[in-house]
Length: 168
Image (cartoon, rainbow, N blue to C red; front, side, top):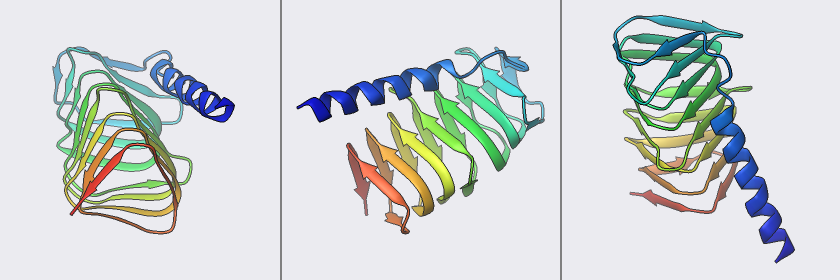
């Protein structure tokens, strides 16, 4: 029982930290925005609850903190952190490499139009993830505390499932 309570406390702290990690925003989106952004180390793109990102986004060491709608025309991720406490939709396959972090918050939704590949990254799902094809977990850590919908979960990376994974 102590271990379960400790785990619940640890997950609460992680979830709270994920919500609080936005810090001081370099760019704050609070309306529909079709601009292109390249986020490097130290840069934080914040989308508030009324914000909608529709332009091209390159994540190259920066942070995306979403509370609104993040639906870029094109998205490239080489390294960085993504915290979703809203709705995100990615237009194609995405690879999260070593050092990258993806946190999907409670009551949040992320949609992937292609495969999500985890190659050394840390991924935590506390919301709903819809992946058109597969999760390819080559290395890194996947922690699911809620719902993941995909065709298959593949690979030899660490997967902890405390929720539901619906696969076809």
